[in-house]
Length: 460
Image (cartoon, helix red, strand yellow):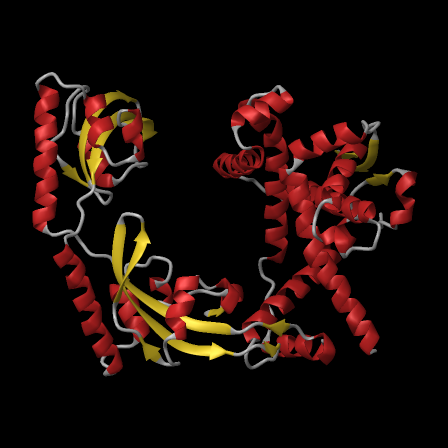
């Protein structure tokens, strides 16, 4: 019985690790796969499977197989990888066929977003758009056009899977049963974890600093109105990324830009230059170039007011006062973080750094080194005094740290690792329900598989 439990756990972990990899291979590695095939001999293409009106080509299977061989998972997988990939392809086609029956629709904007992300990853792999064009003789636009149907299919498959698994939940009793079925010698070992929170205060520039920027922009505006070039002024003075191209932002739709910026731009006539306008990004001079229906074209010069040393000290004083209030139990750390912290990544979680599986515990090796050393100097339950930190190259901020507790390295248990076990139990239940759904639907749709792959034992 113990050995059977190990085998079930092993099969589950194998599917959890390998199926996401197959999805990645299908979606993002087509360019590399084509190149690899060219180097290893051209595959004689043919249809190896049909699922309703959808086909699977041998070249698709071989491309995914070649990519799988270069992955980390290939080192520990001793089964027939082609069968694993083919099964995944067929299951996806079944989900695709069912998405048509269930009228699943994916918005074009979602497809555009995903396609852009895929292309950016491919560009990073090759180094530049030019390198892709030189290697394949196609422009990036041509690749995006060719990939779009595939991306649309994958998003429909994911949407269908999300629909059938949306209501899957596990009860505490199911989590306990899941934990008890894991052999004790197979329980995972978790590294030391820290539970810690931050309250960050980014100094606000005072009115004096803002007025200095406004005065500078008024001087720049006067020079432009007297015949100076807006583009050269943007190149010389603008602190935004558009400054290098003369401040031009191109055509954008209404509702895209910061509301203050957009209101200022649309209040102008073509060619006019605004007075200084304050937005959430800085202070702008805006020139409207053209309006076209629901779109407008503008350029700008932006200068960001910088806080003075006194502004920085004021932030430290605020956090020092807040720290004393927390220590005196006049306010909890969580309440203080939600009200006062400027760290958008943690404030809505009560200041706590989020860890895996929705917990607030972060593995020690995942902590930022500077934060780790700061925590190392604190005792559990202690709140640090305010310190200045560099949050980006141009911004200093004051920060206090709450070291709530340390969870030593340990084997998984229900008391310390409930959320992790809940996640694992949920994934196992979803995998089981997905298998049950596919087993049923594979009997309802037309499936034909080339006899060459009879060895894979894929149910029809």
